[in-house]
Image (cartoon, rainbow, N blue to C red; front, side, top):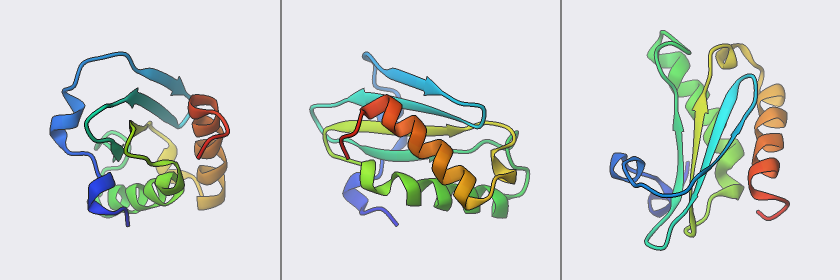
Length: 108
């Protein structure tokens, strides 16, 4: 679980500014630098997983992979796309880490 200070709220999503977006078949990552407070979030819609149990499981997995990449200097949001709920943890981890490397570079 992420520390409370690294969790984004809905208010952070309304912020305007330049963002970098990287896309793969199962995920979309949005990175936005912030001066106030940053953090991480995972967004999983009902189109991706109908059952709340599946959505929460996918969110926990995504946040487990994103944890080391979270920081207070940027907002990092991962949007799940259809088909991501069927991925195993290893496949999810490889694809998501590849996206995060593309979006942020080698820096953790």
